[in-house]
Image (cartoon, rainbow, N blue to C red; front, side, top):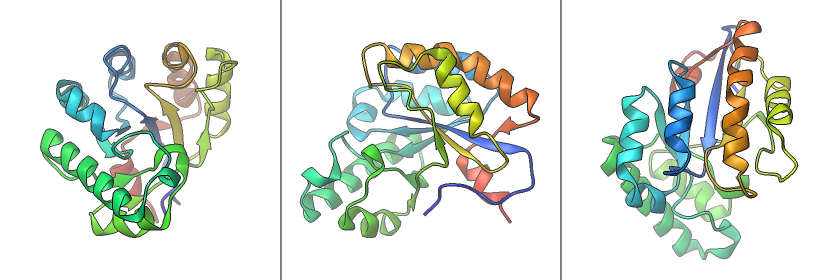
Length: 202
């Protein structure tokens, strides 16, 4: 299970769940600029908006797997879990040009079938070290930035969302991004993809 990396280098991984989203993802790409990040995408959304996935990659980011839909794995049978995870993996691989290296389940909850299937499908089980709870209705941009920066330290995996949540939640996260990026820079931390972060671990 990957949730943090032991490293002395001043690097962190910003990760975004639930997209791609035609209303917001391009905005995140614009504000991130040269801050490589990892987008945990849903298979059904990848199939619907493949050009957004390609835009994520073209901007220097990484695409990982968040499952095929955002239904809790508790709602799936073991066979249904395996089929859905394989479908999501294949959809991302076809669009992105390579098999996603990481899998984070919806809501952060694994069932046994997903726990077993993910590595067999070539994906590492992944969670996070800190989250901003940016999907909550009361999460203001200032609160999202504060929560994110509170967990920022070398090797941290920081969880945000570029889609879904309470009404306008991604817009509030997007508004928080300049303060998050400035705060990371002030702490001497730079953003890397999960793949780079894992490779730099001790």
